[in-house]
Image (cartoon, rainbow, N blue to C red; front, side, top):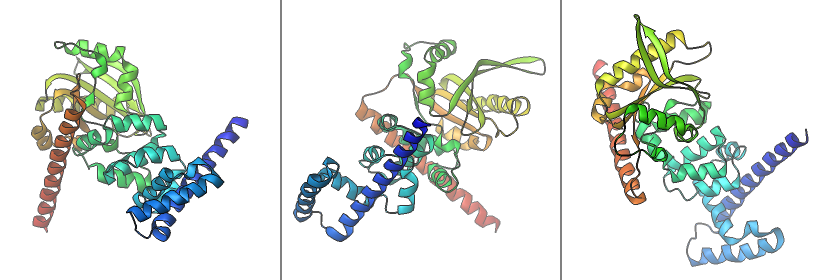
Length: 338
């Protein structure tokens, strides 16, 4: 009872403080500064910070006042702020504010609130470029933008928010030459790290899941369950480049899981094919998202940070262009039918 009461009090205090900081930031930005951002505005914030610190403590020093102003400018809708403040502390907000991309900020804020990320985990996700990798994988399906709208409006978690591309498996410490069994064994040795890289909500069920079809044995490399999606997740590991035949194999596994393993209340199983190298045009043409299949690369070695950022940015732009082209083709097809 004592612990629960303390937790409730902490939640309420955090929410009230976050909303207060937003209100202070908005008032400063709109009524005190009036859009001033040059020396005049800086002097006002510095002077006000000194006065507030003397009366209310260091939480209102000038650098925090500037963050409050940025907070109100970044999240102008008080309804969204009230919702987020119930799950996110001011420290969460401070970690998100430096992100320049609006959709990236929205992704980290909504996902951290929905999945209960602590401040440390949020910072790790930002450092690991989770948003960029989710964008690349999500554009195989409905796209991240629509998935965020669904999460904001209905609280509905979509596979487009769960899967990433690529996956960073540098913690496996694999040498230049290895086979699929060695890759699988390395993942199982580092299962906790692998699940953390997969993301929040994954629970490991089985390795080499045996299924029998027409008296023939088949084996699913790794089988997981995702609590928020309420789905089984089949993972297949491929050493080389993605091949179209991999789709048929995964479709067979998902159909079997749907018929024999799916429990009441669960949604249809989904599949993740991890390849050393993806074939993005083939993946787009096969429209694998319609069958609940995501293809992603895995990297066992990471390039230097600047090169990593450049590569992810380039692939993300290409993924967005493909999604935009696909939507245009779909719209033109609908117009032709009309």
